[in-house]
Structures are given as C-alpha cells and as structure tokens.
Length: 248
Ligand code: ADP
Ligand code: MG
Image (cartoon, rainbow, N blue to C red; front, side):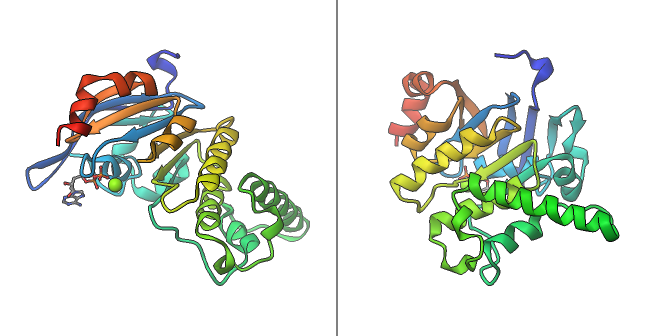
C-alpha cells in the first residue's frame, strides 16, 4: 500500500471528551486514495462520533484530521463539505414529494448565477450528470417517479446518489445497508466498488457479509480506540477483536 505521504485522510491522536468521558481517545488511522475502509465495533465504540468529528459536526478536544493537506479540525462544517467531504446519515433525508431526477438535480453543486447560453449549457451538463448518477445507483428507469414510491433500499441509494453528484473526494456512510434485502446489499457493494475510481469511501457497518464484500481494510474500534486494523482475515483472527465480540 502507499506510504503516509500520499494518504487522502490522516487522523492522528484524535480525541473528544464529553464531560470528561472520552468517546474517541487518541485515535489514529490513514485512509488511502481509492480505498474503501470500514469501521466496525460494538455499540458505543465511537464510530459515529468519528464521522461527526471528520465532518465538523463535533469539535475535537485534541489531535488532527488532515484531508488533502488541509486541517479539518479548524474548519467549519460547510467549509469541510466544500473541501470535498460528503456524509450520509443513518436515516435517509431525501425529498419524498420530488422525483428522483429532482432530488439529484437539487443536490448538484451550483456556483454563482450564470446567464443565457451559459445557463443552458449548464442545464445540459446537469441533466447528463443526473442521468449518469441514476445509472450508478440503479435508478435510471425511475427518474420521473416520486421518491416516496421507492423501496427503502432505493431511497438509500438515492441518498448516496445525492452525495455522489457533489463529487466528494471522501464519501462517508453510516450503516448504509441497514434494512436492505440481501440482493440490495450485494448491489450496494457493487455500487461502492464502481464509484471509488474517483474517491475514497469510509463506511460504518455491522453486516459482516457486506463488510467482507466491500472493505479493502477494516478498522476495529472499541471504547474510542483502534484495537485492530487490516484485512478481514486479519481482524477476524485477532484475539483482541475476538475478546471484544465474544467476551460479553
Ligand atoms: P457508535 O456509533 O460506535 O455506536 P457513538 O459514536 O454514537 O458510538 O457513541 C460513542 C459514545 O459517545 C457513546 O457512549 C455515546 O453515548 C457518547 N456520545 C456520542 N455523542 C455524544 C454527545 N454529543 N454528547 C455526549 N455523549 C456522546
Ligand atoms: Mg453509530
């Protein structure tokens, strides 16, 4: 794998305490470009808090988060989004009363206002991009349907599409396959492999079949710390991981 000099995201000594309780405790890990990393760990391990810290929703007590050479701990949430970090929360937040096309269209990042022919050109670009994303998320034939008629799994894909259209260099997903059928999980894995040509993905997930399908590397969290990291085979055989999962 690559050295620490060309990582996309470098988390070092990251710590946050809530009234003295360290939810994330001296955490370090490096995410490569084009990597799919999965964070696993028991409930309360600090997984969601790590995503909250990276996207600037929660401020770190200590440590650093470097992304493309910039220090995210000093930036505001909207600046972090603009720098190229996209994040999907556990519950889908799509617009049920808009079509699939419209949901994707409104998520397209628009710059300052443009005029005349330029605006027309831009509309064509947006349409192309929406159609391309719709193919990636298996909704090409649902573009004109209201989002409320999609299945739960399709709604999750739509929300991933709403992130992808913003073209983030880092996409973070918190439990993306929760509530999905087995075939939807397989397709979600396929989707993620398809979109990492241009980006890295950081996923929190419990479903170990899905984790095995997507993860290049797994980071195991317990009590806010990394207790193991590596391939599925490596972490599965690690006595520290076995103890955490079977010890209580
Ligand atoms: P996970 O996603 O691994 O289940 P979380 O990151 O949600 O775990 O939570 C880790 C710990 O931090 C939990 O004990 C949780 O109660 C606590 N925690 C998370 N966010 C806050 C907060 N804003 N204020 C106080 N405690 C929090
Ligand atoms: Mg969580």
